[in-house]
Image 1: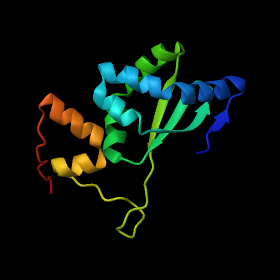
Image 2: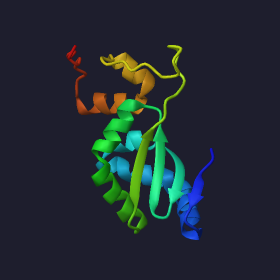
Image 3: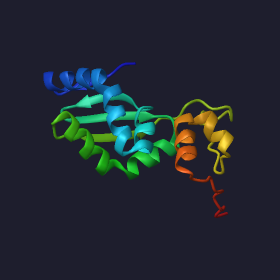
Image 4: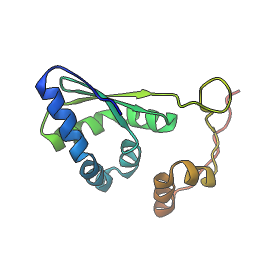
Length: 139
């Protein structure tokens, strides 16, 4: 994994601190925001520019969920590191098997699909008593 650091020594220090603290950060986040934490631990830090952390993830559901909770997550991480930070999430397509270089998204995953792709989310669903409901097609 290559992390690009732009903005001098402070950005490099932030990247090193983040790498060292990521596991503890996820554990702390898990206490208050378990779904966010589940997705957050799948992020790959790809670039640090000054106080802005750029992450990539190859799961569209996780990407969208993290962007929906970005304000709260940014506040949490800023407080954790005692720095005013901003977060940028980008979706990186992982080569799929449909021949077009993109992974096909299952719009109506079963619990078994979720257990296979996102075991931590499946565990949360089971523990919380939530249910998986099919999405109605808009087509």
